[in-house]
Image 1: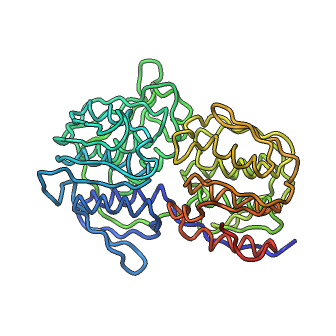
Image 2: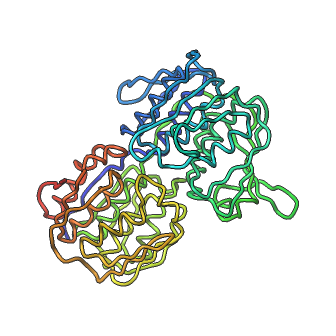
Length: 448
């Protein structure tokens, strides 16, 4: 067997967003270590600076002076927040800014104006926020006029995205009264991301009470318990409280580690990834469970996990809680023997691109037997791929570009139309991927 390829996981994008926001809303000085340097995080930082937060690099860390829940700027004109192509920035900031009296314009670039926010704005209207959509109803760009939040009971639908709830939660401690958030609808997309929000808020001194309904009574429950409960039986209670400044180190990102974990299984050299939390609340930690189901050999030692080259078999997996790794699993399934069924991910159609049809269209070009379904896809693998050169579209989506790179380990020459789109979440991806290629005897990195 070839020598082990050692890789350090990049910092968590989801936790970086939340840490920046909590530190910006706190009164006092915070020091954040390991905040991801990417286009999406740059957008979030720029929005927070517009509210008056000080964010400065300091010795490889970020020094922050928060606003204490009060805007540091005053203007009669709307504060214009360009969220770029970051759906996370858009939805979290749209919720957060309403806690601070003012007028805000949320807009962006690329596909962001086709990504819905109606369920979030409906909840904000319940709290007295005035919303004007400039183009399409329920989509950015939008102007929000908020007198501040008073608390009370709010209902919200999370069938499309859990980010709607995270935006409300981050704002709720700054309301003048207690906020009770009730979930409506038939399902919750990506619940583990709510757990990340609650954990980060707690680190900055703001606890959230999570409860489930049992008959006619409400009882405390945990993140894990809530993930299997009907939405209408869940509520969250947030009392007014100040965010407390402090220090936080952002853990490694299971989403961006997924490509290297998969590479260890489908390539010819083991891959060892350090910096991941074995007990992380990140939903994409489920990648290890998927690998195990498919027959991959996985070993932990301290904070490093190693995946060994393995003969993979097809499996069935519900990916509602971890949609970001669907493209990774789809590409990995092309190396397996048998049928892999991905379900529970209808909300993938609303991502940076349609992440159901996108992988189906592009992986088909590489000879993969793959079929789209309304809530996922089916991949019928025959144990490998036939070498060929393929021109593939990324649709400007970072996760498409990174997942398609796995095909190189099956002898495919992958020619991407926009390899630089990885900068959205992982600017250094191609440098790290070069280690995978060299360790598997493929030579220098091939990006386009």
